[in-house]
Length: 193
Image (tube, rainbow, N blue to C red; front, side, top):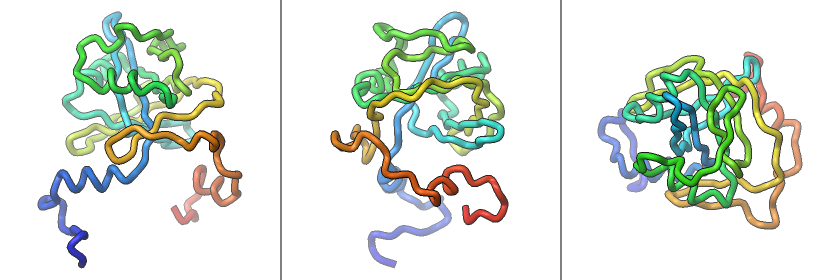
């Protein structure tokens, strides 16, 4: 094993190195929102993913201490706002400990009543389906009820602890491949996934 490698049961892993290694995985950035007791609530979330096509499910992973998660759990519904490249300031605001993150933020209610942030690249309107233990986080499965149309803009990305984006001349995905279709939507038991 090289000096760069780490192995073990997890108890002796260096938390900073663990975080740095995970930072090698580029993610999109979302704002998860709801309305609790008449007030809009939300937080910045990188741990969002598609989960299932049938039924339509997504997931996100809030920290157990999150006040925003407590509000979402009470309301039973949430919207996932996928941020566009120019929404860095919005992301920073919702990633802060600011008590009223919606000050100066324009939004409209989704069909389920959760805030859809103006300028978001996309949004997905969900109800809380199930909640699972995930160490110092919860893993929340959400059932999708509605979603936005697709916009022709670039997403806000996060990589190695900072914002990044797609190269300006590459605003569309690579040419679609049949094997990629199988990778993204495989639902049979004989898949290599």
